[in-house]
Each structure stands twice: as C-alpha cells, then as structure tokens.
Length: 565
Picture 1 (cartoon, rainbow, N blue to C red):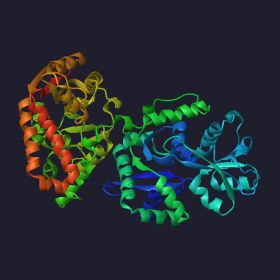
Picture 2 (tube, rainbow, N blue to C red):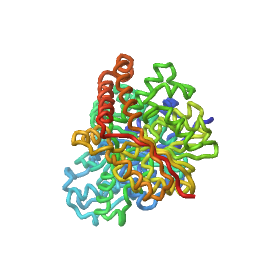
Picture 3 (cartoon, rainbow, N blue to C red):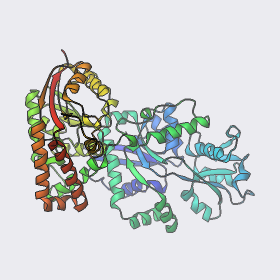
Picture 4 (spheres, rainbow, N blue to C red):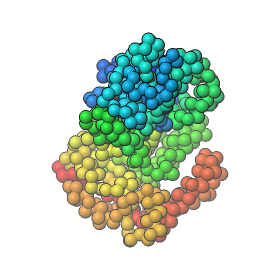
C-alpha cells in the first residue's frame, strides 16, 4: 500500500527547519505511513490562506491570528494543532537611511505588508493598538513579502515593516534595516491548518504527519538543530541559540480554546472581524482543547511504554500478531479482566461480520482489535487523547486489521452520527465524564433501531468518604460515579430498553488486587520497562484502585440493553 502524501506549505524561515530538513534529506517520518512535499510561501500567511482555498496545498503552517481570521471569513479549512506554543517576536523595522529612530515617531507613516489579512497586516493593527494609535488611520503599502518590503523601504514607498525578528536580523546586521522596536503576539504564534476535505477523509494520516515531524525534532540533537538552522537560513549561530532558547515547540493536535477566543477578541476590537466563531468551529474534531485533557498521570506514559515493550520483544518495527499486543496486558487492554472481557462482550452482543460497532473511548485500540478479530465485525473507535488514537491506528495497521477497524480522535460528542452503528460499547470510560445525559443521548442517536449496547463502568455501592472522593477525582479522574439504580434511570431516560445489570464488583475487586500484587512481585521487570519513577507512580495508582474496591463503597457494573426497534 502506497503512503498517504500531503502537500505542505510554510514560510521559508527557521521555524520550519524540520520540514526543510526532512525534505532536503529525503527522510521518512518514523513510525508513520505518510510522506509530504514542501512548498515555500515567501508571501506568508496570506498567501497560504489563498493556496488552501484553491486546494494548492493540503496543510499549512500559519500564524495563529491569520489562520483564525481567514477561517472565520469562510476559508474551508480547520486548525489541526499547535505548531509553536511560544509567542512570536516581531521586529518593527525602518530603513537604515530613515530619519526615524523610535517607534513613537512612526504613528502616521505608511506600513509595508505582504498582503491583506497576512500576519504583517494583522500585527500592524496589534502594534498600533499597543501604542495607543488610531487603527482607522493606518496606511498600507502592499509588497508581497520580505523581498518586496526591502525594496519598498529602500525606495521610501513605505516607512515601516513588521516581520519576525530573527528572520530579519541578518538584514539589520548588514545595515539595510534598523530595528526600532519589538511587538509580541499575545498568543501561541504558529498553528497547523488543513483543508476541511483533508480533515474529514485523512484524519489518521494527519495525526501521523504531526507525530512524524515531532519525532524528527525530538531525535535531532540541539547542537545539530542549531548548526542546521544557522547554515540553512544564513544566521549567526549565537542568534539561533538565543531564538531557540525562547521557542516552545509543540507540533501536536492540541490547542487552547481560551487562546483562540483571545485572538478573536483582539481581531474584533481592531475591526478586522465583524463576527466570530466558537473555538470548536475553528478546529478539526480531532484537535483537542487543552482544557479537555484527562489526568496526565493516567495516559501520558502509555505510548512510550508500548514502544519500549515491543522493542524489548524485538518487535519495534514490522508486522505484529494480535497475541503480541495482548501480551502487553494493561498497556493494550485498559479495562478490567483483559481480553476475556472483550470475548464476553462479542458473545453477549452476538457480533458478526455484519455488525458495525462504535467503541467509545477506544484507548490504543485493544478492545476494537479483539472484537474485529474474533467476530469479523467492523469497529469505529473514538479516543479523546489524539496520541493514543494515532498509536491505535499504527498498531492496528501492523496487525493487519486496518480494513475492519478505524479510529477517530477527539470528543465523540463532536461527531454527528445518526443511526450509523449496530452496537456501541464503552468500557470504563463514562466515569470520566461529568454529565451522562448528553453522552447517552448521543449514543442513542448513533445506534440504528434495534441496536444494542454493552457498558462496563464504576458504580457507588455506598456513599463515598471524603478521602475516597478525593482519590476518585484526583487519582482516577472519575468525576461521575453514581449508583447502579441511577445509571439505569439515566439509560431509560435516554430511551434505551431491555436494560440488564450484572454486578462486577467482586470480580473487579479480586482482579485489581491481583494486578497490584503481580506488578509489585515482578518489580524488576516493570522497573526495566517503565523506569523507577514511573514504576512507583503506577504501583501507587494500582494500590489506590485496589484499595477503593476493597473498601466496599466502590463497585463495578456491566450493563446491556438496546434501542427500540
């Protein structure tokens, strides 16, 4: 199968060194099934907005404010993640021959911009606002990009130009420009944007693309990065080191909704935008808001641990068998009782090749793979954590089940499925969600008439103590644990019928205690895999869970039922 290919665009500047490095050295992106071609846009964000609209590129690395402004104005694209999380430092430049020596003297001067709605245009407004100038009086000279600005300032067709500080530093050092001030963006400076069509049809591949570039950045030594940037972009090494120390890389499908709101607030205050959009409508469904994240202590360690465990087996690359992943235990199957619970699930719902199953909270895909393998069914999994979702796609491809199993990242409530699935399953997921009503309503709509469900979840057998409440909330991210009776009422209120509850409390109490004891008994093996610090955290977490079940107030339940035919 040929690799998915993306046309990617960005400015020809040091921020994009990983893309240049990969393209120039024909590097494959580690652990991915994607490739890309690179196109430079000297005209900046405005030029990329136009290229996205015309379908000339699939993905673009853009200034946050420019991307937001153009998406609000109708660009059929979506933000898929944060590229650089630190603010951008814009230099305020004049010609070295200019009589102006300070920012205060520039209020009524003509400003060179690459194009309207570009970063240089929008930041001219931000800078004017910061200086207390009347933004309605700003006068612009359209110059197309950095080279055009050099000509315009040299010929005195414009007197001011805002551009990224380190990109223009060689021009300042050579005595062509003079920097008279600086202006910082009040938000993360670069985002990754993709056309809507690409977001809808190639989500898994986009996640792999981001991961591959992030891996490339992570595997290059700092000195290697600085040397490459200095040579490739003709900058002094000391300047690159200063810039590098101030830059926070991200390149991940996560962004802050509050920051996107702040961008729109600023653009509206400057009369650049007449209207605005909810932050969710600016982003692809798989771009998760920073405000949504679950406890890092529960999930951030899993990807690294899966890779390391497979490496210890000599299987870091190439095809896998399902048993290789099942051997990883709770790294593959996040719920209790392991694969046995999946086999019981498949038998209970009488799954076969005609069924399409909705797996809510699919983790790294362990449940979905077992169901598809043992029954032949199709499975669509949705996982809030994009990196877990990306890993699930990779592992599923390596075990040869990609034709029957696919995954989506993000909040499943952001996916509008109406009578698509024959069954939905959710194992130890709903306990993390503060309000079950919209969740169950979504699940009801997603099922075809007569469709079945299978849920496993925590329940309260008795009221929790204050200490238990804290442990559930802070250690387990369990924000909603109700009685089994209340669970049944919630399901009935959503419209489900034929509800049956099976008490799993004793089985889970024994299993969680056995998991803790085995983890402690096999400490040398687990320390070698996780390292001492992570081992102690996992041991503590397993002890908390076992203790909660042993206390008698926390229980477990297996619930089945159906949507009326």
